[in-house]
Length: 445
Ligand SMILES: Cc1cc2nc3c(=O)[nH]c(=O)nc-3n(C[C@H](O)[C@H](O)[C@H](O)COP(=O)(O)OP(=O)(O)OC[C@H]3O[C@@H](n4cnc5c(N)ncnc54)[C@H](O)[C@@H]3O)c2cc1C
Image (cartoon, rainbow, N blue to C red; front, side, top):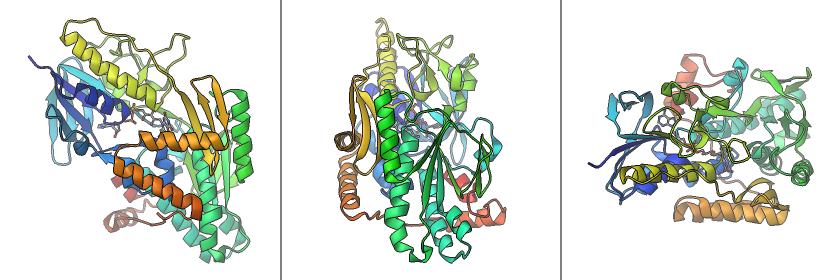
């Protein structure tokens, strides 16, 4: 009998699992709370007005329209029952129960505020398209507000952006924020006078890009500082409110924006499996990617905890999620065919981070270091070819060329659904500067 395979999450792990099962002997149900797949590496460009949300997302039904054995459901998985083999999905109209023979869990991660309530309340996350648009709206509204505020210190605080986390996302966001605020917006807001928008990157460790070799870590810092971004190392953020960011050494930065790129933890769905979770709430899996002690349940991507041959856990990266998604699907097919499942072997082609216009670092195949213009061109090329859909690739390419040549970020639109702004006003949840999570944000999440 053809097995029913349920896949939770249509990010990188889930999408590649479904692709591997396309036109194979399996009835597949792919469930996601969004109707699109999001290309996360370019979220920061949506937040900083470089790209439109539609350019980095692809509708899921469109991806599988030719595969008759893959079905999609829009909804939130709210329960997994591994003993009775079913999942419960909350759609916008009802709750639905789906039985499975095999389950692939690829629900990714959520922002980790390390239990600090004020961060959860006031900092901006950057995990979804909705969050990227909220941050974009917030930045543009602060510049508007800064034009009519007379007090110079207040203006400076409105145009000061703190980014937490010295990993690739933090660096990329800090570089792009600097370019947006100093090269694009400042020209359009002459009322700001002598105020220079400021971007401050805060990292708790002693280095940026910790997994990169020392030369590249230093190159990244030099390149970021040469742009004009202020880098604070060895300091952690211990709290914030709507207009201040508090550091571990007692320093207070007056800023109305804190972007949190300092950590994630596995999706809370992990708890339903009833196993003892590993660091970051990840589910321990066998090399075949089956959850330890849970029959017929495979966990992949950011949610999975598996150590490499050197004893280091595989990182939360797209290639890991893609390769694990494909292997989990393949192992289900092998098991159905009576073949031995395969163990995960990661093909690591390297990692890279862009720091802004013409600046990047890359660590190719874990051997070849590259920095500056060549690394930046490599970054552009790789992200273009891995983006989903020819139309998106073309559109992003045109936008990048335009932005590069003109210093003009075209997507400077404040887009807020009328009804949801009213929700924010009605329940008083919108903070003084909009940094407190608003009704709109709750709706978009
Ligand atoms: C801003 C940002 C930039 C990044 N840049 C890079 C980069 O340059 N290179 C790189 O290698 N990695 C990057 N990453 C990390 C990379 O995105 C993740 O490692 C990868 O997406 C993990 O894949 P996944 O399938 O485990 O989860 P995801 O791709 O996050 O997919 C999870 C999916 O599950 C869905 N979902 C979650 N919970 C539920 C639920 N209860 N019900 C229904 N659906 C649910 C979500 O909507 C989502 O579609 C970045 C991440 C972020 C946030």
